[in-house]
Length: 91
Ligand SMILES: C[S@@+](CC[C@H](N)C(=O)[O-])C[C@H]1O[C@@H](n2cnc3c(N)ncnc32)[C@H](O)[C@@H]1O
Image 1: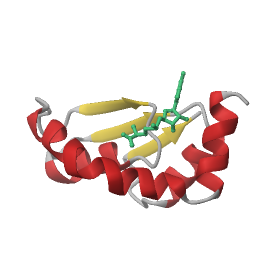
Image 2 (image 1 turned 120 degrees about the horizontal axis):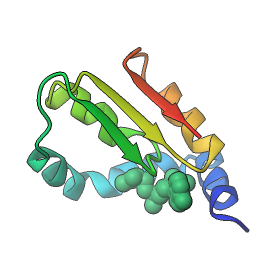
Image 3 (image 1 turned 90 degrees about the vertical axis):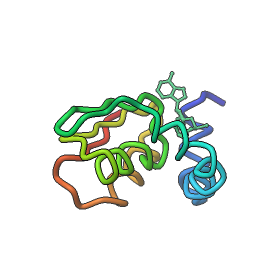
C-alpha cells in the first residue's frame, strides 16, 4: 500500500483527527516557537488534518496558511475543518 493510500484510509476512518489530538500536546510548543510574524504565509508539508496551519493563522496571525499532503482524503478532510479563505490544502 502506498503512503497516500495508507493515509487516505486513515482519513476515511477519522484517524486524522486522532492524530491531531495525539500530536497537539507537543506540536503546540513547536508551533509557539516558530518565528512566524503577522501577515506571513506558512507552508505545511505533510499537513494531515491541517491543524498546524489553522493554529498559526489563529495564534500567530499568519496571513495565509497552505498545506500540501500526498493523501487526497487528508487534504479533503483538512479543507472541511475550516471556512477561512486564507487557509488552503492541496495534494
Ligand atoms: C503522520 S501524518 C502527520 C500529519 C501532521 N503533520 C501532524 O503533525 O499531525 C503524515 C502526513 O504526511 C503525509 N505525507 C507522507 N509522505 C508525504 C509526501 N512524500 N508528500 C506529501 N505528504 C506526505 C501523509 O499523507 C500524512 O497526512
